[in-house]
Every structure is written in C-alpha cells, then in structure tokens.
Image: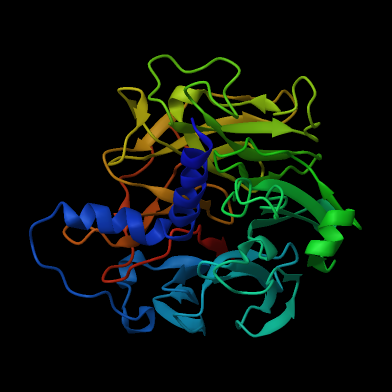
Length: 388
C-alpha cells in the first residue's frame, strides 16, 4: 500500500471510530425504503415494565450520558457534548467517561454517578486548527484494573509531526497504563513519567484497543492487523484476504514487549473470526464479544454476531465460540452484575437505530431469545455499563 493510501486509511479509520454508533445504523437504515421518524430524547422514552431490568444501566446517546433504572431514564450529561464510553469505577462510586471534540481530540473525565464532573484526567488539546492536528491526541477505551490501575488506548506517537508524509492523521492506538488520578498529557506520555506504554500498534490498521484488565494481572485487548500481508500484517496472512483489509483479534498478554517475538500477545481468536469488543463476566470465566463473518476475503459490512465463549485466564484459552445472536449488526456487549445475562446494542427493525437489547441466560446451555429493551432511540456505539 502506498503512503498516500495509508494516510487515507488512517483518516478513514479515525472517521469510523468517531462515528461508529451513527455510521453503522445509518447504513442499515439506508437499506430500508420506508420512512422513519427522528429518534427521541432518551428521557422521553418509556421502557415497558416487563422489560425492566434490575440495577442501573449507564449508556451514551447523541453525545450525552444517561442512566436507566427500572423504567426511568435520567440525563447525566446533555446530548451534543461529545460524551461517550462510560466506565464504572471499581468501588462503584463514580464513572469514567470520554469526551470527544470531533475532528480534533478526546479527553478522559471522572464523574459522579449523578453525572457531575469530578476531575479532568487528560489534556489532549493542542492548538486546534486544521493544520495543527499533530498537537492533538486521542484517548479512548478507558478501563480500570486491580490496584486502581488505569488502562487506555492513545494515539501517540503520530510519527514526525514536522514531516507531512508521517503526520498527523495516523491515529493508530496503543495501550498505555498509569495509576488512576495521574495527569495524562503529551509531555508526561513522551517522558513516560508515571505512564507506561503496554502495547505497540500495527501502523495504519487502527492499532490496539479495548483493554480488559484481568484479576490476576495482564490484559485482554483487541489487535487490529492487515489481513493481506502489509504493514502490521498477521504472522500468517489470511487466505483470500482482500488487499487493504484489516481484521481484529482478541489477544492476551501480561505485557506485550516491543519488537520481540510474541510482542503481540497470545491470540485467543482467529483472524477469520474477526472478533473485537470483549467483555468479561465478573468472575472472568466467560467472555462476550462481537465477531464479524469474513466473506470473500473481507469482513461483512452488514452483519456482526454476538458471541460467547468460556475463558480460562490461567491457561489463556477460550472454549468454542457460541454465536448467540446472528443476522444483525450487534455491538458493545456488557454482562449483568451476577454474570448470567447480557445487554448489547443492535439496530431496530425499520429505522436502523441502535437500541438496547437483553439476552437472558447468555452463559447457560439454553439462553433465551433476545428482547428489545428500548425503542425510538439512537444509541452511540460505546458499550453500556450494567451495575447493581
């Protein structure tokens, strides 16, 4: 792939990551000839009592943050402000969330459960102009592990910011680690002052995302790689892969080592499964994920499946992949607090908007049929949080 095409790939990937929750369901909606109404404000949507789930669910919609308790939706942060990716703090007393300034940068915040901002944890804004994107950074996919260790995906470095051929649309994300509460900015990252790089992205693929800390140490994460045999290629290129195609693998590694054998961690899924968006149950014995069928050498653009498998952290192995929901564009699974059920996002029939769905007994031999919990919304693509 030529460098101009690689730069274009980086731009496209950035656009896809920023607009996933909108782009996918708009694509599906475009395939339906019927008219559809605009989505509602989540606080105006009523959840049927028979679909009332225990506990509280936090979710993002239209750049705002909301909570669902029983049948009532409460606004935590207003729509249109770039809020996404809510994460529950380990002690359950607050949230982390990412705030996106479209086209330029994103930052991490700590919030109370009411949505009030406690602290801005990162400062990724540089000089915000169309020609100075090299001074801006993207932080995404926060996760908190044992000992209040914070993991996140970050797009530094971007290459030589003084060389247009290397900068600045290269947004391949690597995984970094620090203590929760450490101030994250370009200077501290460059000096690795209390902030440590844990993985190294395959350039021009999207990189490493979705860290999931393990109770015994180490991480699960998603590694994007070229399926064809280009920069960031798979160790064994995928047969019949379309040139320029990226696929994702879920990997496990206590600490990937740069430029050494095995630096990408141990692969838990195969390239042809194209699996991403891992979520572990509280006992960390079951993993839910989204796997996209690969058709004619490229991932499907119209289907992504909700998949569950048993997981053994001691041996780093998965059981057979059980595809529980197929034939739709499933996304962003999250387990119930007791680890038996799942919620996830999928389009609503007729308009393509992402809605919240519920799957009872997901880790059992006889899971129930999925039920749609919300309607008339247009949820962002980030994973919801389900807590007691």
